[in-house]
Amino acid sequence: MDATRRIRGAVIALAAAGLAGGMATPPAGFAGEKTPFSARDGEDLATAAALAWADDARLVYVENDEAVAGGEAARWGYLYRSDSRATSRAYSVENGEIRTATDAPFDFDAPPLPADWIDSARALASADEAGGNSYRTEEGGRVRALFLVRGVMDAENPDVPTWAVVYESDVAPGLWLVIDARDGKVVKRWRG
Amino acid sequence: MARLIHFGAAIAVMASPMTAKAAEDATASEGVPAPQVVRVEKIEPERPKHPTLGFLDENRDFFRARLDHLRVSLGPRSGEATEIDARFLRWREMLAEIDAAADTTGAAEAWIRQRELMDSVADLLALETAMDSMEALLDEQTRRLVELEEDFTGRQRTALVVLLTGVPVTGIPTSVALIDPDGDDFRVALGEPDRLALERGGTIELSHRLAEPRAHRLSVRFEGSGTVPAGEWPLALDLARDRLTFVEIDLGGFDPEAGVPLPVRNWVR
Image 1 (cartoon, rainbow over the protein chains, first blue to last red):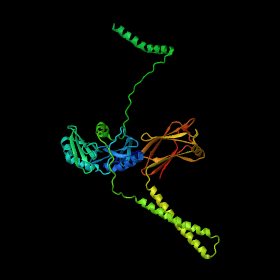
Image 2 (cartoon, rainbow over the protein chains, first blue to last red):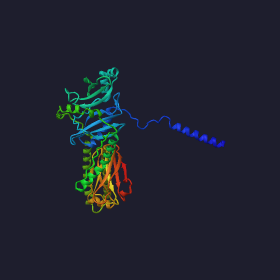
Image 3 (spheres, rainbow over the protein chains, first blue to last red):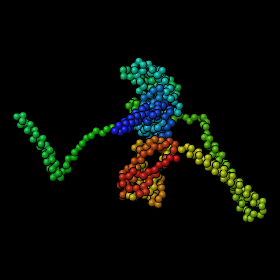
Image 4 (cartoon, chains in turn orange, cyan):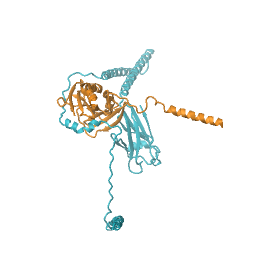
């Protein structure tokens, strides 16, 4: 009887130890972990997909699909337009893979982006320096959106590609900063 | 009085279904179609698992208004010289080498034809030398072919090849459709040569096209009159970038009524 009780106790102790081990810190590389990256790093994969969709696909818009920190986001969206298909298609890239590929609900026939544009980190740094940092501090703000487009955000120079950084706050009107995507200079700024 | 009102209301309620049924019976007996019951439900909007371009979507009117004031025109072509692909120069060199080799082999072939009988050992030596020369030319040609193949396969883009083989118990379909909810659908009609090939154990290529390097959730549908396999079968693929993915659908002995998955195998090159 005593031996049986001791064996039973040992088994229970072993099971408990195994259970505790299983509840230890998850191993490295836990599934679902997202690695932030800059907008430029996901462009190549999205473009490869877009060219399979249409030979004349051209990148026209880039936007963060998840929150931005230091100019990097865990997921970026890339929008391509095809004249031959007369439609646009969006690719969302995360962890080096295409998460979604969808036809845009509307045809975004913006001008094609040039090959050269500054990366998102540099664009955000320019915007932060030009007022974004003080907005975050004084208004408790955060980056709402960071997007790259040509011809839309600077009416005086529509040929220039621009990054737009939109800050928002719960207690104050938003802050918009438009950055020249060729050299990182601030070209426009407004509140609202 | 109140009790009477309640009693009357109860009678009215009880009478309603009877009245509706009576009306239905009456209309049916008069040859008028019975009223159709209409039911209204709310369609739940499809919410993507990974929403993208949210800011653009929320402000599309703003962007649309800005775009309407733009005009895109093609600028003049740049007069600057552009770098020539090095392969073009290499191909020109290969063509010149091939032409030279053709001349050499042609001369050797003519020499051999002129010799009906070897007159002396010297002729044998000359023949052996000519054969060595032709072997060297063949080796060079093989090397050029390997170089071209490596260049070709080294530039592989993401592509999908769909093959079909076998005859199902329900008969060969007249067409096969591949449905992609996130992309383009396509349908392939099976002509008489295709049907003969399948009946004789051959394999036919349904599709060979460039594809997006991502997870694809396709459906396969067989179409045609008669007893072809009905319904759609899911086909999940994760296409590797810059690789050629083969998918073979083996319908040999496939019985769609058996409730088994579509027999498919795939490999990557």
